[in-house]
Image (cartoon, rainbow, N blue to C red; front, side, top):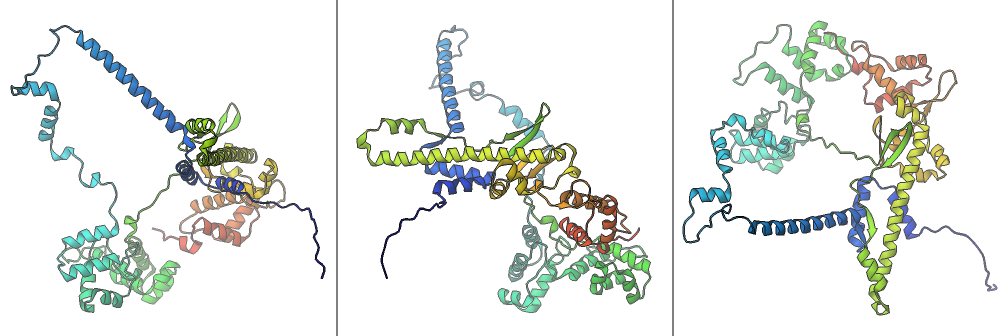
Length: 505
């Protein structure tokens, strides 16, 4: 084997740390970008927020101006006539009530009289002053403290309440609770029955049937245990039998099967179904906390003098700049600075790169949104029915960038336009072929909207089946398969025709 050296020339693309940082900034959402910039301000002393610095300068100038005004007022006050000056208070003599009023002001006296004379009706109740709604656990624990349960029974009640899920069901098997509570099964079941009488009705049930049965008992009997007077056409025995044995048939609207099995008329089944529909399958639903996230758009699209304009939203984001102090320190430091100068030069390069990356990010976003406006101008002016099919490749070719760059730019970015606040990904959707093969394909988002409108306008007693929706879309010159309609219907959280069917009242 011979050993030799060869020289070869080759090109290789290397991802530098600066390029990786620029790509990372490009795909960050607005909140993530804000957090990243705040972190950069903490780590790099050469970076500073221009907005904060201007506010500090304005505050300083305002304080200096106030001091000058006070000095001028003090000088003018010294030159006033002696008749206008208030008499001096001697330290050795006690102050009278009038002198205290002159010092402290007498605004507290009528306010105090108003508070004393006002009734409780003028003040908001305690519930109106709460900053947040109580959770299901807090609501049940409050009732537990007011109940007759004491000692070990109250501890068992807290254990049961703590194991309820967000819907108010007790999913844990009773033997496990008996082991955790170190009590007998009879004692646990006794406490459980007591908690099942708490508000909301149906809480602490094991399954749907038990939950509905608990609520059914509350409908039949009042708090004193006396039977209520219900309409004669409603048979609670039929309602109870349907809950226990025919919930699946009820879900699939098989009312005739239920009537035949229970040997009752169809009208009796209808009346029982109306009673069941008034019950709550999830008792904990009113106490569920909905976390509504606030979306701040990254760009605004407005029409100005007949042309669409893209405005970048920079409110709330730090406006970075190089600190003038450290810049002067870096230029004025001599050769003996040594390590300090090297450190400042390194931080200066990092600060300059982050500022350039943010500027490039903003320009890229504006460029991509401008391209989206070009393709979806009809949608911005006329609405959802004019949304065109669009893919990343079309925008990438229009702006001269790679598809991966367009994907990063449109991820977790929002635009405020005449049609509302929309994610940039909303403008990209597949196309549905037209029946006559003429004209452009229709957007899948538009087809979903048409399906939703059809279902909203259908008769509740005779809902549209998927095949009927396909036929109606074909009349609108839209060619679509039945399984695609079922897919879009599931994405819109629309139940099937059998589940949407309602009993005529």
